[in-house]
Length: 78
Image (cartoon, rainbow, N blue to C red; front, side, top):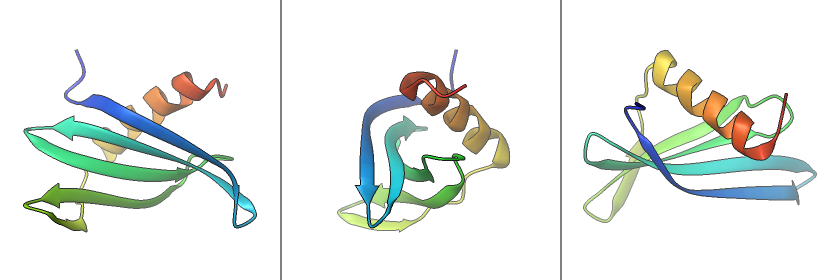
């Protein structure tokens, strides 16, 4: 069982000459957003939303890896 739940995902095709994937997810009662470059799933940014504001998220490498693998499967990358 995953320690998170992806609640939404946006694939931005050809935004500013690049393609990005943003996943919104719940983890430990917090809402997060993480954006990857679609080509190699490199992390572009990650945010945690709290009381109407957003702050840079401090996610573990393990958590980022789990989400990256999940996103990869959902968008059909090998």
